[in-house]
Image (spheres, one colour):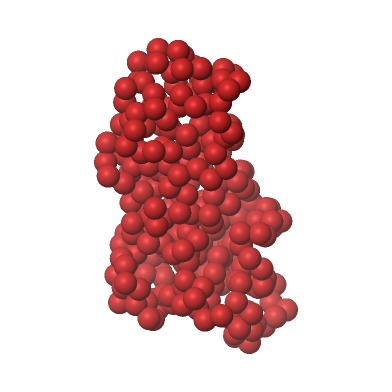
Length: 267
């Protein structure tokens, strides 16, 4: 399978690569989990900075390229030919994550990272600008949605800088950006995440319309925010609504959604 089919474009800008390494806030000797190293454009600067790199790469051809470029018995670099969406990302202990994320699976990868809990120290990721803007979006803006509140419930996201198409070999047709994600290091109730999915299930509808299928209608109608849309509310306000409704399921409700909205950057 070609790298383009895998959704990858090779970053080649030395200044951008250096800024990514500087943004990690890691110390020499720390373990960096690199997602999608490709030909090793970022791997080299990571190793030069004194980091121990665990590289997760799906493409066997790229794995062979990396192992030919650096000694396979190197104590500083280990290349794993595995799918990041299926791998146990906690197997290397607490790590700092870096990578150029394939555009078509950015959101699923983010969800895997959020599930790492305290094993994720921080993450500096190159992604499509559209997705980056969603991660940091504020209520009432066009970009604010489920992916925004999912991210902000788990972490503090920062859009660090934009990266133009010309910084890549085979320039993408979209703008890119580098984001730093700093975990809040506090447990997030998965039931609350499901609740957020229900709130944004039909973004233009009010909480009253979106939540009546999951909670007793009279309780939903009594909410001061019932006539508002989820996109108008801060994460803290949504959490307050959740606490009021928590433990009050309607016995005649629909089954919980299994794929919350806005879980893919194309939505």
